[in-house]
Amino acid sequence: MDLSSQKIIAMDCRKNLFYLVVGIIILTACQQPQPSRENSTENATGSVIFIHPDGSGANMWQAMRLLKVGPDGITNWDKMDHMGLYRSHQKDCITTSSHAGATVHAFGVKVPYETYGIHPDRPIKSLSGKDYSIMIEAQKAGLKTALINSGHICEPGTGVFVANSDNRNNTDTISEQIIRSGVDILLSGGEIYLLPEGMVGVHGKPGKRKDGKNLIVIAVELGYNVVYTKEEMEKLPLTTTKVLGVFAAKHTFNDMPEEELNGQNLPFYNPEAPTIAEMTSFALRLFENSGKNFLLVVEEEGSDNFANENNALGALKALSRADDAIGVAMQFTDKHPNTLLITAADSDAGGLQVGTFGNDLIPDQPLPATNQNGAPADGQNGTGSLPFKAKTDQFGNELQFAITWATDQDVYGAVIAKAHGLNAVKLPNNVDNTAIYKLIYLSLFGVEL
Image (tube, rainbow, N blue to C red; front, top):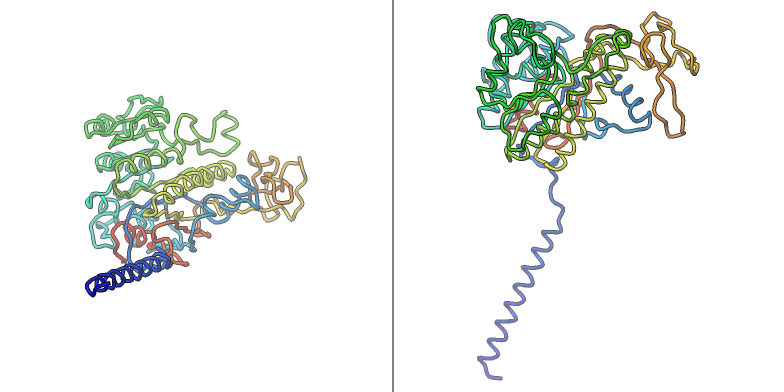
């Protein structure tokens, strides 16, 4: 072999050795564990789903679990990644109103008790320094937006994100602001607040607007596709960009005590209206099809209203519906990891408690009207009815329980905030009500406040 051939062979060997070393380095790097999102110091951004099961304290979640999956079962809410104890106090009161609580979520600052998106004497400046809510800031940044409520359209849990008033009862003003807000998807009840006084709507009730305006007509002029039932909603194509769902004259539920519902033969919920889970699923399908990031705010209002009526079964049915919506949102979040799911109530409605009267409950015997200390007691059909039966436990038992009430008002209680998915690890263990805004803001804009 001549010298030139030996040089060529040597060069080939060095080249092969080089490629072998590079290959080993690349393979080793690929096998190294990658940093998880939870351990990352980067502020990842994406979409946010905020679900607000109004009035739901920890005791209500416990009671709902008993009925839905049993004492040893796991709800969707149970499966969420991170949790913290929520503090609901306001500037001038230990407890909060629904309108003040929602205002804190929308603006990130504490406010007086009587606040619906605006101080009585001046506009609110949000924690980010803007003169508007986080939803309006998201709109200005080009994100998709949606407000979903099982109650009427002016309910503050969603309404204050785009509307304000010195009185939450100014439904003419509030509803018009919501319709004109430009939010892409609006799903709720409240037809009577969209129609002029005396005009009978699709749901058979006359409108209440004193200004003579027909906001349904205005919504159509603004480009909204208006639907009135679950069936009509589901028929809309995925390419639909603006939707107004008007699913009831007022609420999609009948918030009365059990005895009144039974007496009038009324259901808990309007069967033609979509559930909060079905509304959430619909909005997420449209947003997924759009390919854009979004802010979706969802409120199950029934868990609060039924509890304020001391209707135990109604409150637990409503909370179970909220749990179904959380399940829908978790499926979306797991499919789209750049999505934060966060949930919290602003207060504990009625101070619901689970009890067994000292384990003195007798099968097939109605409950007494009150507990030993005089607290009102509820069974399956209200006062003086049979005890509730939990779903089967791990031993095959169907354990009985009763619900007692502390009040018919919203109380400080033990509210739990939970987070799942994007930036969920940054939910504090002790969650001031302003922290909901902060985590939403971080996840939408990548900025810690």
